[in-house]
Image (cartoon, one colour):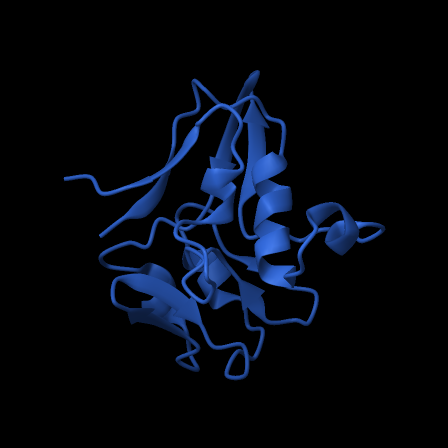
Length: 143
């Protein structure tokens, strides 16, 4: 299964992946107009440590602790992709605490959010990958 991978050697820390992620979930025809004047809350986040920038997003684990810890069943695996049912989420944030990668966050509506590889969109790959100017984020299958 294809997943998003990050090569921190190539990450510029420009945060364009965050804007592309937010745009993918807001929709619209023009990113500048869709995101103008709003505080973005992307599902991929850029972290910096000791001068190295890297993107943090869901790894879609084969044995996902977040899914096992979800008390309502709002997190589930669908064709290898961990997805969220926001209507079922009660905001207990057990999944946030159990994710070893820090890839799940609270959304503005109180539910949780995470990368779902843009599977609910018409894109052929996640927009964070398409929008990375240095190809630090890739969408590929690895052994």
